[in-house]
Amino acid sequence: MGIPEFLYYIGLSAKRAYSLRHQKKLPYKVISVGNITVGGTGKTPLTIALAEEAKRRGFSPVVLTRGYKGSSKGPCFVTRGKGLLLNADEAGDEPVLMAERLKDVPIVKGGGRYEAGLFALQNFNSQLSILNSQLLFILDDGFQHWKLYRDKDILLIDSLNPFGNRALLPFGRLREPLGAMKRADIIVLTKCKDPGGMQGRKVEGIIAEIKKYNGGAPVFLSGHSMVTASLQTGEEISLDRLKDRKVFGFCALGGPGSFKGTIAETGAVITGFRTFRDHYKYSREDMARIKLEAGASGAEWIVTTEKDMIKIRDLDLPENIIIIGIDFLIDKGFYDAVFAL
Image (cartoon, rainbow, N blue to C red):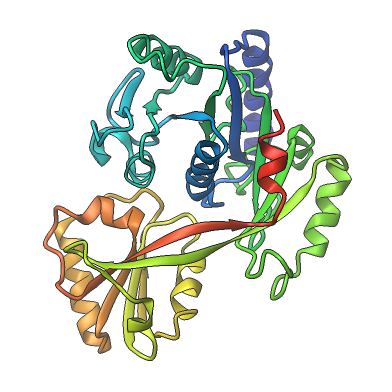
């Protein structure tokens, strides 16, 4: 461990010790979704899936999120469950995506998730129907948010690049040492091609390593499936429209390779693919370059994600753009383990 890594580890350890000493507990159950690496592991799709399943099981879920890069300060509603109250600049792109996908689910942005939870409860005083024993908080990106007690910690690990070079920040992708996996109650391997059969993914070695640090937590395999394709007008089209067609893809995701693979699964011919850093704020110049590159590549369609569409919808978009909606797929039994509270 080099000096920068060591200094990062000392700072992390001090922060954790302080946070645990001052940890607070909300009066309702809290489920946390998080990871031990930087970059995309699929937290947002899982948070959406958890909230939807919670509703099916009779819970009243409330999502608490820090709203990374959102300009709004202090606890505030991204949505009360009845439409957006903040835009992507104010809330961050992922909270807006969650708000657009989830109906009747309040989403509260706040750096201090305990304060955000109290804010939600105080503002629900006039909505007595939601204040019942089935209210449930879902903590987005919360594995390192030790200030708030959680009843269940779900840890996501990217099966395509689980631990990077195994170095801590700033020289690696690890937010914490691998031993932190022992805190997880449930572990999910994401981006597995076939969650049920493990086909196409050599996950056995990853699971064996996980078990060295956490032998008790169940490990589930998950993947993503394209469920919708739509034009910028909102009109849904069949995914078959992409088969054998030339497409140019672009995205600003933590794991862009996964999205590129998803496009390829439609049978499309990828003529070009442009990536931007995660949470990138697109400009009109960016869109102009994308259209130029797509045209030069001979692409008939330009393809991107719902998350990216949130950040480009007010720009000058090409008429041939297709927005892909993706759902979370996971092993049978995962939700039973999560909601056994």
